[in-house]
Structures are given as structure tokens and as C-alpha cells.
Image (cartoon, rainbow, N blue to C red; front, side, top):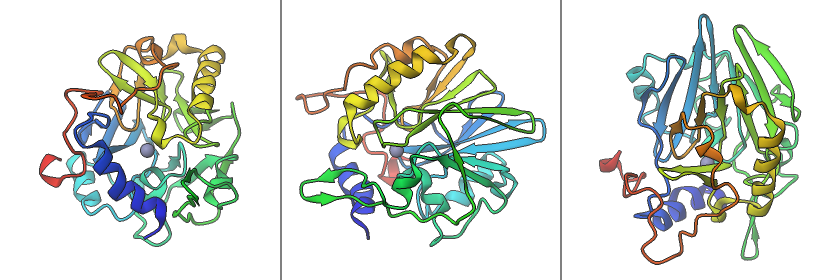
Length: 272
Ligand SMILES: [Zn+2]
């Protein structure tokens, strides 16, 4: 197992147990257009409008119950026309790894042009002590690269990508049809609003904060109706989702619980 997979599957669950930091949506329909699957602590989002069907992020490698979760919401992953990755961490891009069964057989894959450096291990993810963490996900060649601010159309959906570096150096957020914002791992959400994502996972939290402020300034937030995060659910309080973005939740503080309604341990199967 690679260092980053070990970190994601063993260290993270141990550190975060009881902290309320991770609270994804349960598998289900979230809005008229958006449904999701929950894999442990993360969500894969599906967006459907008329005959157009796309997904945001691909979840973990070899997630055992993937097919069962798809059935719960009547999703056939082979019908996904396009897969947009927010970033290349194993909980977001693992589902496309060449070493596992590919469920998204007909999806065109999109990833940020800066993030490709992490995918190819030109950039390291983050240093933990003396170890530079490498990516453990390999994606089939032929994927498409997205630039900051680029707009593409797929059927009835308009997808705009914005570079919001900090969690990873090439992290993208997406605005779909001008009204749905997918923040990936740039924002952590609780009942007080949105915060800078948790420091331990970020390449550079200061950069994440600056990027979020820049994004807020330059994008047309007025039209946005929903904000979806990858690890903390979604909200229609769009202003609230940016309320505390210049603050990093201090989960090391004694007794700290980020979200009191979050599962004690997202990775424990009896809690799922
Ligand atoms: Zn993540």
C-alpha cells in the first residue's frame, strides 16, 4: 500500500474519530438534479438534466459497495458521459484507477491542467516528516485538461472550472449551469457555515484561504443556489458557505467537535 493510501485509510480515520470533521451526505437524491453516493467519508455527485448525465469525482479505489450504492439511487455508472475531478487524491480519483474495475466505462474524464502534475507525480502532494507523499492513482491516458475559468458544454449542462489551489496545487471547483457550486476539498461546512478546509489535509492552508477569497470575488455568486462540499454535505445558504473561509478549524483544541451531528467514525461500517 502506498504512503498516501495508508494515510487516507488508516491515519485519517484514527485522527478524526470523534472530531465531527467528516459528514458526507448519505447516498440519495439531494436536489432535483443532483444525487450522490457516500463512500465512507466522501461523496461522489451525479448531475442529471434531461438526457445529460455527468459526475463530480470518482470516490475511492476498490470501494466494495459501489455497485450496491449505485443501485440504491438507480444510477448506471456506465451512462455517465463526463467525469469532472476536483483533484487527484485517492478518495476523489481512486475510482478511475487503472488497477481496479472501471465502472465509468463511457465517461470522458476531465482534470485540471495544474493537477495533472500531481497525477503524474511531477508535484508531490505534501511532506509528512521527511516523506514527500506521491499520488497512488493512475488514470487511463486520454483524459482532458481544464484551464482556470474554462467553460465547456455537455448536452444541457454548462460546466465552468475555477482553479482554487491550496488543498492541492491544482484543485478545481466547478459551477454547473451557473447555479450549483461543487467545492471539493476547499471548504469544510458545519451549522455555522463554511470554513477553510482542515489544515492537516492541505498542501497550503494560507493559499487555500487566498484562493477562496479570489474565487468569491471573480465568480458570479448571485446565481448560485446550492453549494456542495465533498466531505461535509451541501447547503442552500450560499453566503453562509463562505462565512468563515479565512479561518482554519482548530481541531487540535481540547474537546473540539466540528459538527456535532457527524458520525463518530465514517470509516466504521456499523456507522455507515
Ligand atoms: Zn477529499
